[in-house]
Image 1 (cartoon, rainbow, N blue to C red):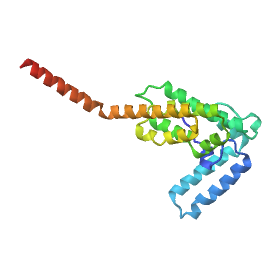
Image 2: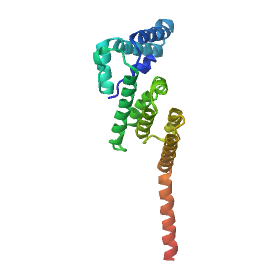
Image 3: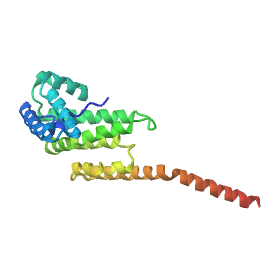
Amino acid sequence: MSLKDYYSILGVSPAASLLVIKKAYRKLAHNYHPDKNGGNKLYELKFKEIAEAYRVLSDGKRRNDYNYARFGFAQSGHKTHNTHFSIKYILLNAKKLHNHVAASDPDRINLIAVSKQVNELLSNVTIKTLEEKANESEITEFVRHIIVASVYFPYLRLKTIVPVLVKLAKADNDLIIDIMNFDRKVKRNTLWNEYKILVVLIMVMLFCLLIYFISK
């Protein structure tokens, strides 16, 4: 089961210090507190989600356990994440999703769950971390993981993903070409899935007409 992305909920980088997490929480709690928003239920739910994220990320052990459950390894000694560490577990999370999709049956895969995880991987916080801290090979690895993870998405969904990947690729022409080829492939597949029944019907009708004229 996919865990909530507490870092995105608070709008902080996975490398954020406890001080940064506290500041982010205080600002969001002030903005979304139900008492300040006329008891609005949506704000109340958002406030509870923010509080939940803060409870986990502000506690060393809970944050450590969360990182292990979500990314597959722990934060040694409960110390503040360094940049390389944050990039490393972004890539590990992307690879984990890549492997899950690659091993899944296309007819049974839960695209809603996969789409949610791709959204988390392409959150503003994650993209900003990659743009500022990741090297070229790490960017390439991340983009290729997202490409595989998105392979079964309909083209309309992919249209929101491709611009983000192209932006990450920057001046890497080979990577941009791969992204655009992937874009065209999904577009073709989507069109085929939408019209294949019509195509089959037309072919059957043509075959029937051919049989009819031959038999005359």
